[in-house]
Length: 519
Image (cartoon, rainbow, N blue to C red):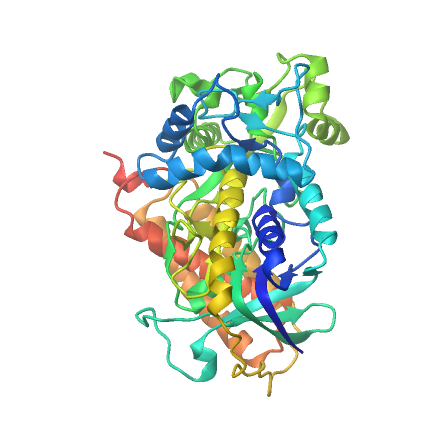
């Protein structure tokens, strides 16, 4: 099937949905999402969204905190723009029907998280992302100009390459005409043509064995831009959240929000002793890269697989009312957080790099925008400050929408694009070729390209990846396309990019830490 729209959106998190609502008055909008509309990283964001809302805080403080967390390599102009726009984006979310917790005085109830010098995290209990997703999806369903299509897997960005022209990373005017997408219900590959396209495809956490990200976070947007020869940046900066619930049988790993440490929870070793004083004066509220490395070091020294988070000092009523999701989840596993310490360990959580975009969300490929975790704006630098991700997505979705509204007026649909050619492909009847390769890939990345790296580990990962890449490409070139095969191919591309950019980074900065670069 062939479809034509003005605005095509790939992804249904905060970035894709808020962008769609803003452009909808100016043309036909189609949102493609690979699973259920609500399934994505936004839904799992427990902590909240950072913004300066009252004069007890200041833009300058939030800017400074972001720059410090980013280890000095943030784009300062982007940081200032994003943080100064935050209050207006918050007001828009409220207008869309999103509910944030309020204090008794009628002001927003604010949390504090690691790296923040003030209480500035707006939240909805400990399931903020799910509330944002609910509010935005309701607004989407109520808008007549927006069509949301679930179970549609974007396979490739359509460029001149699909018209028979040679495209390389040096081609100056690569253009996006839309995407090819696999209908996961019919197994047919459809052609979606658009005047402008927004990638809001989320992260790539499933390139690692242990991750807090949903199983659909397989780096699809980044991999598509890589194949389309677009510009990517800072993919070596994978943020590992310090505190995921230790429960090896569960994937994704359940997140224990940083707001719990902001409320007074303390990290302790297996003997019940505090240890963060050995690593940073900010203790358990140090930025995530520091805390994750500290926990990793404690586990390796003791030969254990987890440490503890002690929340018992917060108080029973505050724990149950403030963190009901975490309380209920732990109770299911026999852990009463009002009496017991919580076993935790780091997990891959957020990709700070991605598709390089300018302040309007434009990528290096014409008519292609990116926003949210799949993009690299310069806001995060070497390490994302807690709860800046939802803020970044909202700000860049707005900027991209304002830009796209003008661009779409002078852009035409390219009807010369051919449909997908699946001639000669055969059905792969050995799923083990995909599942086992995925496990191998995740183990390689976890062991060699994780929280702490070395030149030897990176080279070993690179060599192992080359074999996996060749085997998978051979399978891809002869097989009928499936979601599982496409995801594996995307994960391999993302792993390659992480390793390549990590090998090129010759300094320890932010989330990239190599024992060979220690001075």
